[in-house]
Image: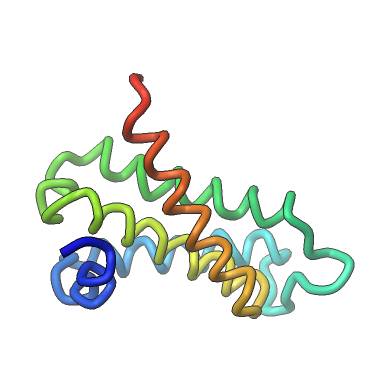
Length: 122
């Protein structure tokens, strides 16, 4: 169980929800990269920009779970929801930067941001 198995099984059991999150993530990432395939690198790349991209995609993903209860029911637990949101964030950062390390950082920050959003009262 847990996140390890979830990462292995996510692509099979997500009913195109993961695909939606990744497409939207790439759209958000490209918007932050000025809508071109040019990457945010060098002097332009900083943690503030990454946090904006991560927050935008994570908010989109988690809002889908809140707005459409069947999306949450389709997934078999919080670890799937967290991992699908993290994968969407990873695609957003990857599309914006073209770099692996910021993408992994985005994935990790998404998982960390998932808990407070779900655990805190509305």
